Length: 169
Length: 325
Image (tube, rainbow over all chains, first blue to last red; front, top):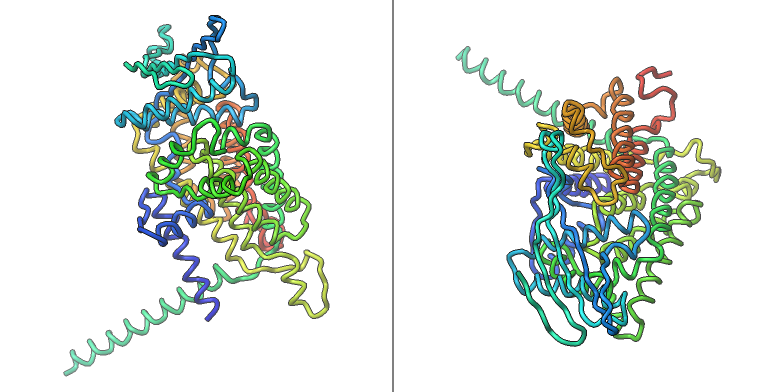
């Protein structure tokens, strides 16, 4: 009896992993939704579609900081992080901006969050301009002819300490 | 009358065969899940996985509050929005908020969670209270890495899975409890295969799913995917622009990845091809570590494949080559 129960639990778990791989996640409301969400994270269920179906462009950043004394310096979000493991995660965070593209309020909040990181890094900063670029590499055929990577401005936001200022493109 | 009798006989024969099939299936499942195996795969998984995750933890040690905390790089409201809309739970983050109401600041909370996580991993590596250590490592991994939904990537899910299956893998103590003589040596320890089978099937689904998802994109067929992955992955150590002059090499690598991943569940089980597929899989992850710079991810994946399929589970020599003794 115990073995039968264990076998059932086992195959349900395998079924859920299979559904996760097919990007089918049962959605429940309320407590069952929470139980399912915890279960999926705790057991590592995901859709496994890394670098798939294609390898997409990346988002790169450029930050201009205006200090209280008027000095202007340039920096990037990832420069304060040293280990490769952290840098991979910082780029993941920057690339997460792509998910905000159709939601203006969320886009603004996301950019403000990134700018907030720079305000914390430069306590004497007054204004920060955050630029995010869509970075892409040419095809192999174009690269063989000498083409190089291109950057297209995706977002530009200006943030000032203590006030809500923004100009977006 | 004769014809009716023959049909009736055929029906009974079919039922009999069906019954046989059901019995055979039941016995096969019982053998697959509950047959006794060597503890070596679990021991290898415990040691190697905790070692790799400790190595990863050392790399992240100074930057945990910033990467995963509520007041870190990405503020909690934005992070939680993506966590919830993605079908995940902002539980880890909500727990941080709850603790902050008790007067514990976010940095202290995250550092505390991370410290408990690393202590659990160290304990797991050294084999102290392996069941308790694996439960706490699994839980604290979730509380740390699950809090930073947007900063987590593939490695976190696979590491979580490995830690989860470690919880269910039997420990030496459970054997000692059953042993009348009280012998605690691991040599004759034969736990049921279920936890290992779970991990094996998880890996088969993961590789097959990843391979099929890649096969749906045109870049994996014309070789552009490998070229783009190397040039676009953050932290990739080499800018191999020269690969553009050898498109056949990129195409070969792309096709090789597809064959390896889609073929994983078909070639990793048969004893004749198992060793070859393990070597190919480990080689692919070595390539990912070198050219994409995803060292932790590659190490975790290599450990999972090696422990699930590469460590002899029967306790006999030369299992992979099929030469049983």
